[in-house]
Length: 373
Image 1 (cartoon, helix red, strand yellow):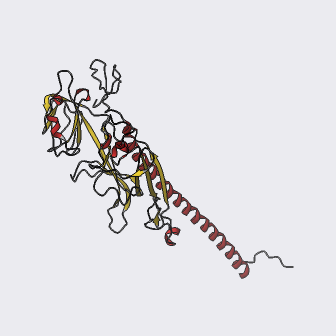
Image 2 (image 1 turned 60 degrees about the vertical axis):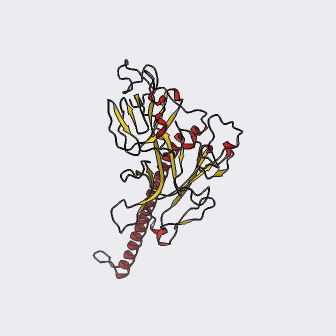
Image 3 (image 1 turned 120 degrees about the horizontal axis):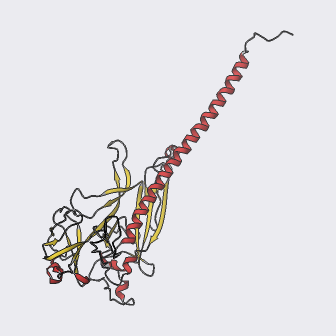
């Protein structure tokens, strides 16, 4: 037999080797593409879940504070068109609460229907800001809206108020009553009322008109119609929001302000029919439904036209949506404990002027709140 040393590969051997190499490369490429697609899909899912967590965190935090320092009937705003088509179809949530960090003492004889003078102002306030003015001992209180911006000040400052309309929050006429001027050593106090207006909006976040807009949970700041007070997006990828208000017995209802549904007072017995009407003061729980989508679309799902609808809430049809995005529906119930209040909370604020650093990084000796400090 002749030795094969020095001979090359035959054509068949080359073809077979090439075929094996191509199969190996193809298998490796397919595995790499599948791995990359899986990583891409998981990244999109994690992004969608992050947006869902952020949105729920923000909504839940505000709902737990709803009505703090206010009469329960003012805990929720009811703007026109907020309720959708029924008790389980609202896609807007307006929450109000008093700011725990803000308090300003009214100057002697400083309150009137048109303005309130304070001894100092711990933070700047903007036109449209809702304020609450409380007589000493919370014997009387009223609400108003600022008519102009006002800067932070360590000295006497005047807050101009919008004209009183007789409806919340423009109730400034009551501030003419004598108790709002306070007495020596026991002034009336001004508190700041925060308003959070949640909606779902589409935003052009990249400035390119050719790319589709992205959905966000948007939080407005309740400063009226001024164009620079629209608020900001707080959670990416939120496609749908449903708010359901529940009574004490768990039934869903659409709150309303009307003569047919007057609010109960702090003294109203629990057995009274006023505790069961449709006034917002009778909200005892809020069911949140949120739909979030993945931050990245899946090319396979998109090509097949799959995931082209937003999941339906109870009693509502599915909503058409761009295909290819995996979607997540989450529902939870939050109990706004401040709506069970039996009196308007009026915390005591520290007057400690002797402890070094009191209310500036150190707890005051009296252990009281440091609003504005």
